[in-house]
Image 1 (cartoon, rainbow, N blue to C red):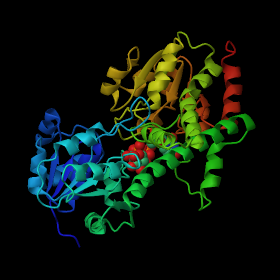
Image 2: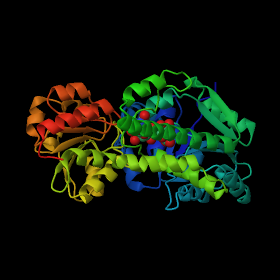
Image 3: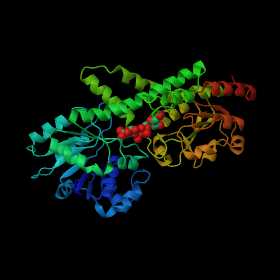
Length: 447
Ligand code: UGA
């Protein structure tokens, strides 16, 4: 097994902190460097600038092996292997913005020994080749470069690191790849060793395919609504085919987060920039954008024009167990509802503070109860556990109209309806028809 060699982590964001904490847990000394002094200060004081379940414990338990610094030279004083974990957001053109990556290369101190730069950030295919060239031009031909994409999902990142489905290592030199692969040996995960470009593509293609599955099942859900099928049963029936598998077949109000929207756009742009029109991904993106807005139509069906109606949004984060609002469907949905003239009251157990800065014109409730009181409809946006408390007689009576639009098919339609709610999910024609009939009986004044 590889010795417990000291490691460097450049970038104390979500990927960097999970990587640092989990390698420290495996017994490595880790030096973490960031350019943000406030962030480094917080980390030194034992405060986590992000929310990720379990990460605070792993960091606290292994604090003795982790050092935080603003000085990149400290990384290479201590370590011969440095993971690059900096942000690669989308530019206006949909390409990946590699400014932070190039900044790291510009900042490299004089390096006499053979050190390895290991790219964890998601980068376009061909980036490794360009970095190799830049290193050579800077007289750093002795510095190795390895692509080692991360497959951590927010909310389960610590678990994903400890038990990865696979570890992907793409290297220019076999020995460099073997060295990085050895670091993951304790996880026992299957290893894919390949060239740098293929490793870069594995990451982008994996995220793009998962996003494609989501847009696919969302379209199936939409067709179910007009043909009388129930997408929950359809997804289950599809997922039991081992060639298809059950994952990422949950329909909803579209995928969000810091990865899928950015990576699907980046792969589409990368293909386009190389002269290939990736039609399928164009459709995946368009379906996702439309899906975020479908709830508006469902609300109008029950409530008529939304001007002056009070709509409770339950959950804002792009998925549960995170406070991340990046590309969250809730942002588009809330903005559309405001544009329709609705009053929007939003609740989320942990994302409210960030949401206040992003969503002007939205009112915020500190509890789910407060959000739904007096509302014309409650929309399930994020599958937080607390949302299970919604279908009760007490909350039904607190609403102006007992309408639930379940954007995640999270609640049991029959149970909700038994309590007297009008319930509408995504892609559940039977429930939709039932809901309409019920709406006609209980709300005769509405179209
Ligand atoms: C995703 C990938 O799952 C990770 O493997 C990858 O490492 C990560 O991106 C990354 O590139 O860093 P993440 O964005 O954290 O992870 O979250 P997911 O759990 O994949 O969910 C993404 C979005 O898809 C969420 O908005 C979720 O609600 C939605 N989703 C997911 C669905 O609408 N339906 C599903 O069946 C699954």
